[in-house]
Length: 195
Image (cartoon, rainbow, N blue to C red; front, side, top):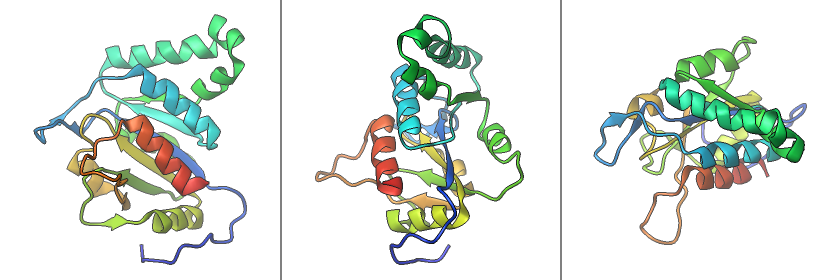
């Protein structure tokens, strides 16, 4: 990917995007590769963000069956029965949630049509092949399809970042503190890339 000026390339319609909320492999505060716990509020709020920004799917990536069941139970509450009747807008949002064992399963599902896509990693730590928001936005519009990966715990493992086509620059606040909750990072990034 070459560095480009901030512009919106001509395209026929909006790009198709999916989000991966990755719980494995991620790193803990010691830099060890781990599987992190599910935070149900992340799933709930990120599904609503995905619906707001016309994201095609929110993949929750965890190999732990008990965690998969938890996510499925939260989604089911809002997509069928009382929750769906009580709040139809949440039904639309939580209907975007897909639970998968691994990043490979997510990518196989997303690429089942055989069309090209970008794999974009996010990290508060930065890295070697960092691209700016305008560069990533342009690449998404040019390619037309992309998956944005967000890590839980202390971020995506290096093996995940290494397989991505692009690494998005970190969000910088006004202090040295740099550990946003993942749902806040998703909201900021989607707004910067798609608004």
